[in-house]
Length: 168
Image (cartoon, rainbow, N blue to C red; front, side, top):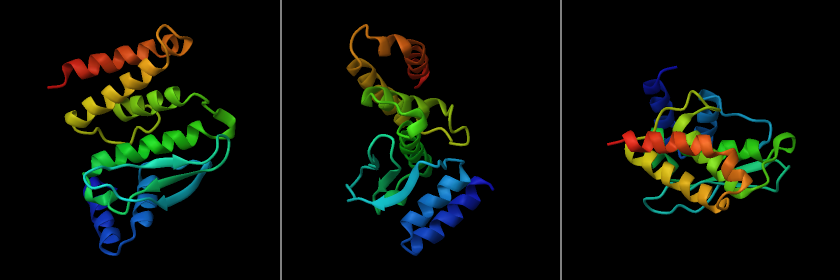
């Protein structure tokens, strides 16, 4: 299915206030499903900010909370933010739990830039890529100077730096 068809489907969902159904449709359309996903829930909307969260204990099924105005934003941004949260769903699954929050966030922002786990996700704008890169650097820094986690992710950090340096 092409991107324009997907947008048509999303508009139909939006017209009928079916935000959760639209989000489920994106999971299916872009190969984001995971067995540790418990479903979507609604959270409070924050004007001019697309904020999603993944809720649930480590090792337990996860619920992704989305705002009712999610589909007021640009589709590539929405897809990247949903992919970020769906990576958290995977990271919190019993068979592959990533315990450290800084590691989880770094991995998720890296995914938003390079789409290694979710190759069907389109690139975000250069503006948003810069934001994702800065957030990744923030979590990398929080891992602790010279820590084992920083050493583990040094190559990915360098990839992000290279990407950010060539953006206009």
